[in-house]
Length: 484
Image 1 (tube, rainbow, N blue to C red):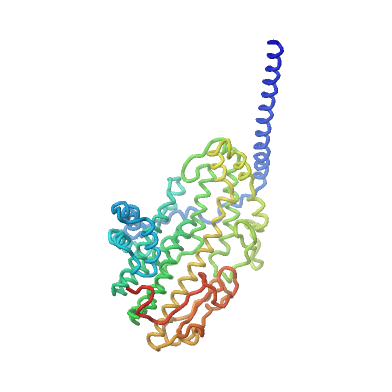
Image 2 (spheres, one colour):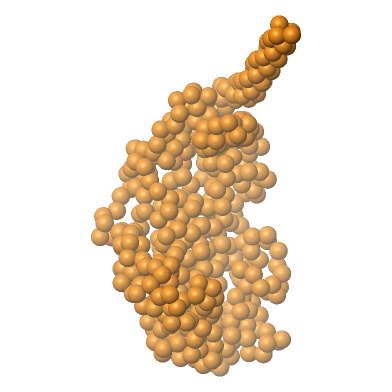
């Protein structure tokens, strides 16, 4: 019996070993085939060279005393979190705090003592923020440092966004307590910080800057509708918004800074850290660089033009532009469908297969997937357009309120704002075809007016939707959203 049992055990072990060898072979084959295919593709992906003068771009620097981020970093360090305030007072219920915080953004009278204390203890942070906002220039990351592989963190902009909410609440407090001039400075600081983040910033910085700028736009519109805000204050606010527009840097700067990061990934050192040697040998890092040169070369041809003068956007992962038929042929520019095809690597597939057995390696391989790495580039230049549309809408709202202060009603058309000298011109809607923003005096809400953009979808919805594309301008009121 023992001999038979041993024979059965040997047979079972033999089958088990065969199954393991087969499984390992299948796994190796599953990895080797796409890797081999990718290596084959790499040999055929054109390398168009640098899409711009990287060395000249990386040479830009800014002295600390002129750099807004010198002061924003200090502000972030001084920031007292809401959790710290709640931990210091056991009587504050977390649910009450969050509910009050949200409501206080519409009216300071909704702020419970805990929220008021949170704003008060953060006054030193707000003072440093103001120093930063007063600067004309900003540089969060040195392009030269990034190019040299100096490790960097992407969380400073997000921490600044937490501070921005307090800046907004401080504006609510000041207007409710009868200090409209000081309140406007809070919204002005938010608008300037938004522009600072987009100056030589990454895609993430630009998106965070948009969120901060939106606080300034919404706060500014509400502020302008307060009866305590006079014509002189509105004129000063208009000048401030125009100065923010002058701070605008080309959208291409953001794309160029992200390209510097792609160059690091190309060497197998994303985020300034060294990747696994076997992953670097697969050819994926090199493909990121080749694909980035193709993608960035395409985007740089159009992103600095007004939106309505750009060529159409090709459907795909990267928001590439169709080639301009009016431009002479350029060997460094490939048709967008060809670029998309080159950038469709097997990195994502391999990462998915490795997820269960080697999650860290899978995550690293995904960093070298062009579709993942560069998908934010389209969002970057879209964010520049939406931010500009919102600032222009705020500018119109301020001018409309100034007209109301001096004439007792909103104008029949936006052209009257120019005729009366409130604005030099009416800016075109960034999402239109060169035409100005839409406007009308409301009949359903007598005395009110509405300004709107056709927005990202290019559809004129008549200013009836309550979305980002619309700003409603109300007659001045002493009991508006900031009332006591």
